[in-house]
Image (cartoon, rainbow, N blue to C red; front, side, top):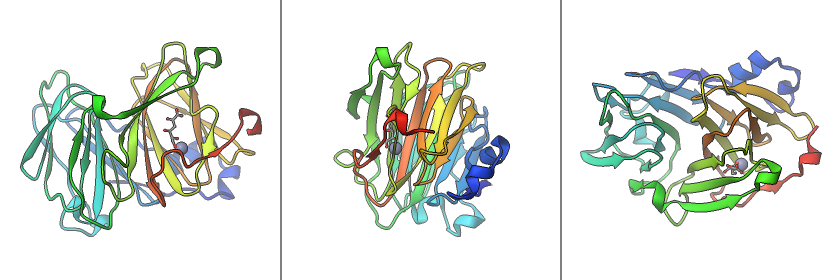
Length: 276
Ligand SMILES: O=C[C@H](O)[C@@H](O)CC(=O)C(=O)O
Ligand SMILES: [Zn+2]
C-alpha cells in the first residue's frame, strides 16, 4: 500500500508541481494482473485499482488498517471501468459490466475480483472510507444510477453525471460515488466549480487517450494550482479545495466523496471569474 500525506491550506501555496503530486495524486492504478492500493490522510480514504487477468485478485487488509480484513471497519464502492468482470463478496457473485457499481458494506469479509476475458480485463476502481454501521451490499448497474445532465456545448462543459452510490439507491455510511461522462467536444468538468467543506472528494480520470491530459485545478479559489493528470490516476481534494479541470479532449471520471453529509447538491457554488 502507498501513502499520500496531504498538504494543508497554507503550505500547498508554496509547493512545486511534483510536491503537489506527491501529496495528492496516486500512482497508476491499473496494471494488468496487479492491484494497487493508496491510503490518503484526507478523510482516511483508501483508493485502489484491481486489474485481474488470468488469476483472481483478492482485497487484502494492511497493517495500517489494523483489521482482520479490509472491510472490518470500512465501506467501499467499486466501479468497473474496463471489460466485463465478476466481484464475489462473501460468496455472492456480482456480474460487473463496464461502469457498473458495487457497494461493499462494512463487515464484508472476503472480496474477490475476476475478469471474464483476460485479453480485455476488468478494471475495478475502489474507494473506501471508515464506516460506523453495517448496511447492505448493493450492485448498481449503470442504468439504475440517477442521472443529471449539466452544461452545454457552447461552454465546452456538456456532461452527464451518473450517481450510483447515493442516498435513495444505496444506504451507505459516508460514501457517495458515481461517474461523470463528458460529451464529444466538451472538455471542462465541474464548471462552474464549487467547494464543500463538509466533504472531501477524490477524482479518477479514465477513457483518456495515452497522449492526452486533464489539467486538474485544485486549491482555494483565489490561489488555484493546476496538475497535468494522465489516464488512470486519482487525485484527492481536501475540503477547502476546488476540484475541476479541463482536458485536451473529452474524457470520463469517477468522483467519490466522504465526510459530514451525503447530500450531493450541498455545494458552495463559485463563478469561473472567482478563480485566480
Ligand atoms: O460534488 C460533486 C462532484 O464534484 C462532481 O460530481 C461534479 C462533477 O462531476 C461535474 O460537475 O462535472
Ligand atoms: Zn464536489
